[in-house]
Length: 264
Image 1 (cartoon, rainbow, N blue to C red):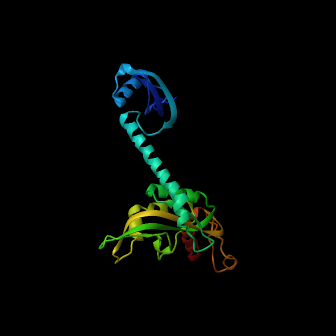
Image 2 (cartoon, helix red, strand yellow):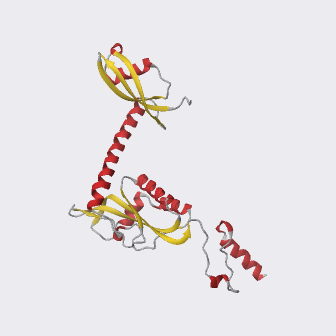
Image 3 (tube, one colour):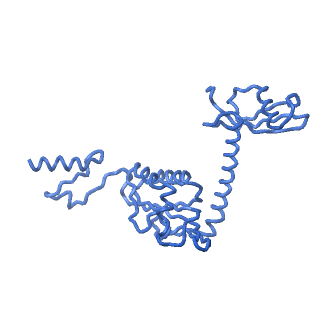
């Protein structure tokens, strides 16, 4: 057992024969009753001698937080925030999406729609989406936004569409290697999203991002990480040298070496 392990406990006790409860982070299976009674007296503003019949119920192990007063407060705030976010996501998935459904422009498009929480949550959803893909694909992301008029302070909501795409007016990126999605995530910072989705010379500015739709257009027959298969007329040509079988994607290096050999 690691002496640095921390766990979350629900502690029950009697205070002047009245039942009480507190939630507390403590060292996992390494705790003293007198220390716990001191914590209870501080939290409940009770007398030490009035606290009796301590019982601890293990809830879960916790990583990265110290088992002290500040650590417990931070963890309880985290749980409170997570509970709020989970409730917002349930409402979004069960009510909002049904009321405002997203319909892709093509039947070949796969998509997932999410309530926008923060940039880390977006990146997590993107990684999960990528893990589900076997074929190389073109990627797009469209945002539901709330816009504010900088002159009148009027607000308008815009649902995800090609007009709210991060790649509006551009060629969609090709995801053909696992490291392609890493580059994509690096590009999708919150500041960059705001800058790329706003429109120049407009009185409307983005007040907040509400939801996002991650779209995948699979490329049939070409798996992620696979080499490109050249057409037969190139393979059979005596005047064209193909480098599709070069390992580690070092095609340019192979071309340089071949050119030098041909010149010699």
